[in-house]
Image (cartoon, rainbow, N blue to C red):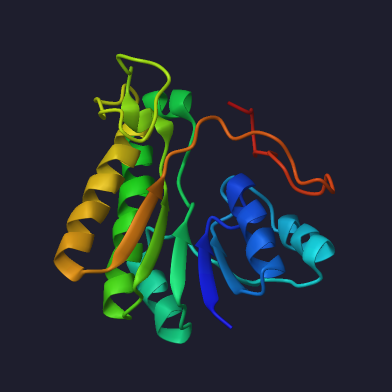
Length: 198
């Protein structure tokens, strides 16, 4: 059975992904710092799937804890959702966004390289398209400079991953979401941020 690490796996998109992975027979390990979710999501995932994923509460900016995790846990692939995600907040707190979203990504990629993990999925954003000249936007739409620090972190993340893949021959893909909404059909998991929703 393949073991998949889901960073930010107790968040909105992450928790839904954990459910789908477990139902498909994957063993799942979740890293989350609980900065925008609660530990109770683990119980809700178990209620939906019958399985509690392995869980580690780690701040991905802490390279020593990230390294310790990978030293103790062999995984076959990584899906990276762990990032701050509010556009407006990123304008008010740009350094926090750059530190969290870029440093966390770098620490995960360095561990991926050190521990010979070959597959990586990056949770990016439609904000990498900036203000597109033509609608609708599709995968061939040219990227433009994002307006908010949040979008800039996603654009930088994609660039970093592209350079990393070129240098290491690892496999990676970026997913660029447009306003994901909704909840699991059970109603047990959905968008429930800490603080004021954006």
